[in-house]
Image 1 (tube, one colour):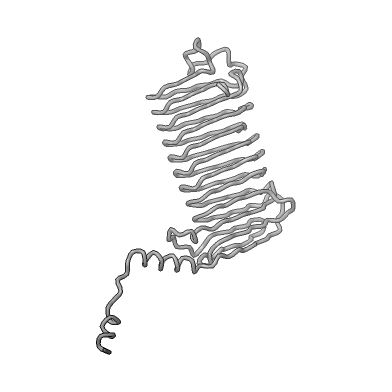
Image 2 (tube, rainbow, N blue to C red; image 1 turned 60 degrees about the vertical axis):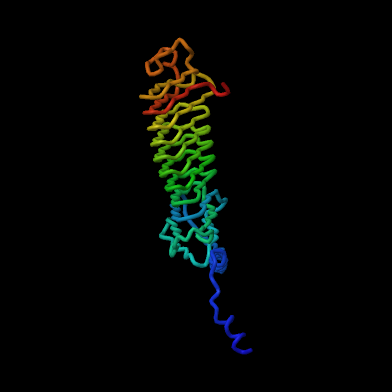
Length: 284
């Protein structure tokens, strides 16, 4: 009888894919979530640099002369932070990509409105709102969203992440993306320049008195302004179509100078290699 009982005990139990999945989930869940808070007193026009790898970075204005950063991350990640005079640097360190949610590090940061803010992440999202200082965004697949920014230089560079700018006033804007779509809503300033390799570019709003240069390789360009007299337009697509509803059927030469627009305060240059270009009045 003892021999009979011992035989089953020696048998190896096969490890199924489901078993491996459960074990992996248990290991991932063992990482503890931490919440760190960093605070710094700064002078006017401070420089705030935040460099992440995976996750969100959100920056909003504070009402005092302090930088307050709340960082949520797993205990497998170390947050490096330092202050050098009027410059604050926060960096995600000791992070190994596993594809798990625990890789994400989320930053919620309050800064004085006049701060210069530098944000970088490979994947996730970058966002800033209600600020008046210069902004620099860098991402790979990360999305970029800037809203209600005034009197600032805005520099954005992504590989494929989509870019949205809303309510930007008196801004100098420079956007470069390999394949991301770019949406500009109520964006005005002396100089707005957008370059996309394959992405779509959309502009909607009152351009004010600025100069707008929108260029894409294979993507479409769609521009809508409140009424035609606001801007002078030059549009050219090498292999695509140009739809210039805003000019009317009599003005076929959209790339030509025309007296109707000599008094216009804004100017658009629109270029696409293979994409289509549409210029119209908003709502039409």
